[in-house]
Length: 211
Image (tube, rainbow, N blue to C red; front, side, top):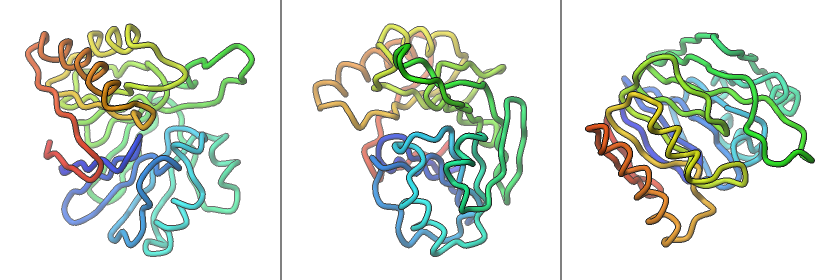
């Protein structure tokens, strides 16, 4: 399975000539002229993960693509056909399977209302928690790690990475970092992964990895 980083939290998965788009948000590269997209998966409703203009671009060339998201994201996308997903749900679209984990977005501050969030396990290989530290219930091949956000600190990220049995890790949710910030936070994640015998990969926008 090929995984391509498209800025911030957006990942594109390719398998058997088909694509699945995860979290096409406002901080990501414009997702124009994509073909063969069978599904759009959204972890939660914030614009940096669920941006109407991005969804319109994808559906323009892939009108049959299914959209899977939590209920409050479905309310945001009321003008689109969506399927709501909950913790423990499994879906299959083309060559892709997705299992959903967790319930709520990590707390930003007590003054902000909590929204729904789903971690995702794609093809039983790559796990991404969305905006949370929700743990998967099994070892994973690749762990996509949020490394910058108003809701996290690097010590929590390190504990999250350390708690999961994984062979590889890659940073994501990182549009807010400078080059200095990438070097610092990536180094923390890399140290945990390599300490567990795994490998760490830092993808720039548009770069890909096979898992």
